[in-house]
Length: 127
Image (cartoon, rainbow, N blue to C red; front, top):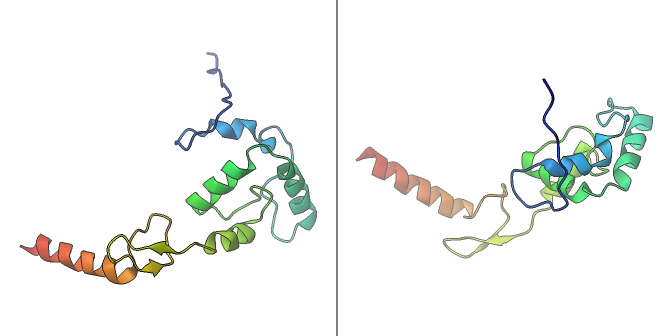
């Protein structure tokens, strides 16, 4: 039985398609991208692999979206990516239009509006 052919794409749309990973430097590298804690030599070697990677932006976006804080991705360690992700931009609430800093990337309402909406839906479900 032969393995299916893997094709590479030149464009990387924002879809669940993750074929962009095949173009990453780590796909062909023998360097361990998940060095042990305290292995600074391994960490630096993994960061060098990522330094000139053509898909580093996709890798970083996926890592933050999936909350993957392990290993080296986009030349950043897990704690470095977590700190980068915590610097979120303020948004306008979809209901009251006040500014708020979302806790999740999918959050569209401020906390008071979200609580009000939850309370209303609970009341409707009781009837």
